[in-house]
Length: 363
Image (cartoon, rainbow, N blue to C red):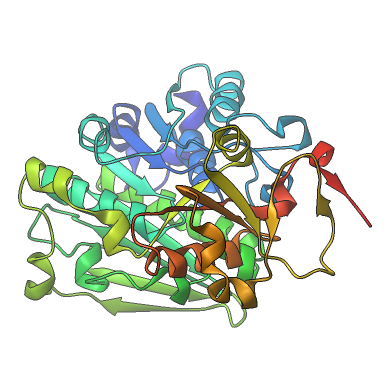
């Protein structure tokens, strides 16, 4: 316990609360801009068992805000890097990794093993699914999100179903094209660092029984003004009707449809899919955008012209859309999926920026 002497010497904290942290189990969903700082401070605080779920790999654009990773980790599964990092740093910490994304099929089982969940995900599909799973299981959920220069934090399901959850704040998700991600709007790496650390602080307070948490509250932080506001959150009875009432209803809920999303895939998956007949890759960038794609068969149709050339997709079962960063492709795939019923549309995550150099050239 010597490692934590500065912590349990704090007035009102003590060894008893430190031991509560040591026996606690926390699941962190997403090892990204929010998850990384949360993981750092949860581990440093003495949480005994941490699970981390993420199916992504480290990319160069992650490094300005995902502070556990370095250039030596590029291309590696994030959760494996996390496990290696903490196993060297804290010998008494149990790190359990899930090298895949949470889904309706696995989330209830995984979440049920933990005392508290921290949501560090970056998409509405996961946020609503994790919220509903935590609601069904009566697990506290520490929500964090960022947009441009603003961040939000709240403790959901703090004392079970009688406390506000994510749907009480945001009853239904927006359309995918209405909410850009940090690839499109940009983000200063320090902002998710602050919000992720807030999430860790709320989890520590909740588990140790130390101070007042943000249960029933929504903290909104503005990076540019350094002003924080805390708003009361009440129960929205109408929103409760949107939550599945059982495991069966949870498994039947179509989160993809309700969140207005299409599936995003990696370039590895895209290249593999393109080896199959009747699958097509469409580059919707303008002619002047560099670099160009080589050695991968594809069709070029600028985004503005796609809807006038729907007949080009008549023979394809699956259409993969790519752009420079993955933002325009997601919007386009979403729009086309509503026009060409029966076709499967995919957006290539990260766009050409994430494509390995061997497939690129400049004119």
